[in-house]
Length: 456
Image (cartoon, rainbow, N blue to C red; front, side):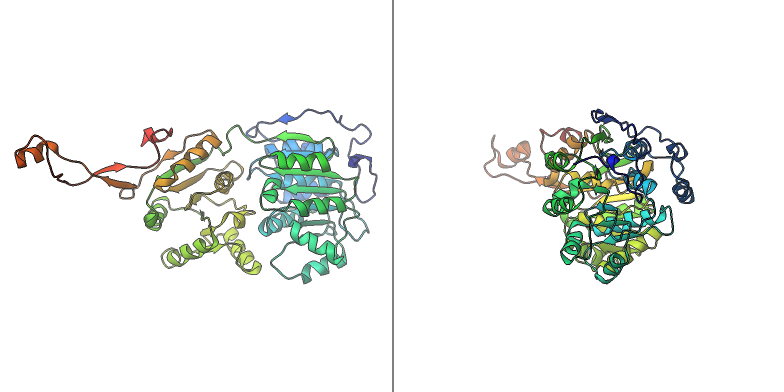
């Protein structure tokens, strides 16, 4: 495969320094994600794109954008390793939009693959907002909804396709989508796509794209499974490690509350009463649990809705639109459905259920504290989930503070024998029958060998 900088297509401009491309042996970069970003005006962008950025209110790059955009504009393949909420969408859209030129080819010249419908809609909306021309068109291709709108869009022609691998494969099989003119490919949230089984579809799609293209891969983590994709489908990529040394945003206040399972709902109401969230996402592990919690919560807490994979796409879009405008204040969500929730007004995240996949903890709390804002993340931890809490603390290299709400501590009674009292009662030095006074309460959260246990 050859780098895209060798291409001179009139509808996709060569990189500004194509005559002197950056060396392929450029080392991996380790960027401080908390460093200040540079102004977009210093990026040497085309005037229409600069005007769209200013209209959107984007003046300064986030650190992720400052790191990824310059090499991507030079035509380099880039691996952008960064956590959620750091501005990755603009980081991969701006280089493509800056090099886009009007063209007459029917098929797209840009392709973005991502794991969920919500994320596809979010990225497509961002591309439309930053479009450098009224002739620029984007199609969001995802399942769970009718094909007619997508079919009509492909028949008319488009510049950029943003979609989930499964639906893109559907269109390729139908012959309604061709990738023969694609020059720019992005794998967004690549680790999540592989986690949910999209690898075969991703590889089929990449094999249908031209070899002379530019490829960007954005991911919170870069495990061995992603490295195999990199070796096979990218050319001398520049790896920009934008993940902080600790996996969570420093401005997010993280706490946990120990609680018995049957008292979680009562605790949730108390937390909402105390915290008064501006907007809040409440995470549960399963779709059925989301529905059950909604039935209990909606009569007591106005503005509460649930979102998960069993809802129709139309309903999911309506709920998300209402959440973005603030009409929905409390959103009960599963992990997969939460991908693509990029709402800056979220002040609180509540882990009603602890995640089975530890990395989902980082993705969950990343829904708040977006782009450097303050946020609060509260986890409800059952007594037997002490190991999960410790593993999360080890993963993020940080102790999560304990929070307490009176009356919701997780306790179990322990029998205690009052030896002197029993002996004096029966006239013996040793009691033959134990007498059980009022049970002493002893916290049983976690195990003594765990590092947080000494704090409890």
